[in-house]
Length: 403
Image 1 (cartoon, rainbow, N blue to C red):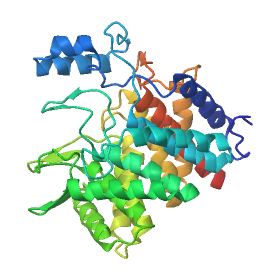
Image 2: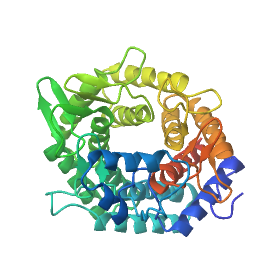
Image 3: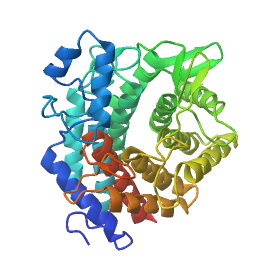
Image 4: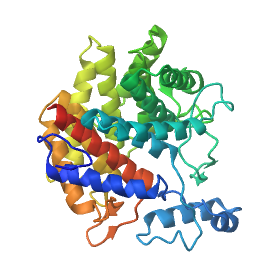
């Protein structure tokens, strides 16, 4: 067995070796790396595109989709993505629980220290975070590293909450509670039969991203274990009820809704919603069985329609290619988690992990970005690939240890 991790004999050597090699790569990188969407993180690319939204979009997506890394030539800088740091924190806390190796607890605390320095409390009344360290141009607006998102805020708050669960640090609970207050006070919308959490505080009221809402629900449900507050539980239930009402008859959720029109994008966000719905069921223990029915129907669609039997995830259902590492990682996370509902899902999580390791992990330890039929994009993105796979493998190994 690995001298670094020392898992028990129920853990397959391929998973132990994989996470050991990934950990070594991350250690050498010191958390820094490129991101698929970092095309504007350069004085050069910002200068040549400053007056054109369409040129900014071209630069971002040209770099994201090109399998050759031109970032050095374009002077695009590496950076530390706070959402990635939050994912690493959760992974290291899981590894500490699985191995009792104090080095992982220390690594987690180092990550939490980084997250603390990046809070936007002061601009806002409560703790909140934005993940990206670069500007990003969407079809609508250009975002900056000063506008928090619900996704990054929840991931950071969840890391602090996991730390509190580990060692009872009051400061970590206070930070997580403050983040939950930010979600409720700045992002909650309840009007015109729509009940949801906005992605960011400056978003319009006519736009709703389903997994953003369920992430907020999961945070409120998780924090309710330690802070009795009927108001946040009522809000969590109302928001999840609205999201469940948007589930399709086949079990899928689309990505978002704008002015009553839905965007049909079915990918790893399905896994996000399932994880969050499971947390609501686990911590709220609702008597109404429609939550479990929605979870089971959504999980069956996720497994049978979004994955191939060998463990490959489809890019965006029903399209197969490219095989994307984020889809692979989320499948491992979700089916590991849902093995508490259906034990056979743990075997499928192992199937996904095994295929991913054998086909998308470099000999130096890092995971590739995307795999196509005739070529592979091997750019080692830190947040999109390494952080998610670190969390995925640590989640799987934690379940293996306890099974």
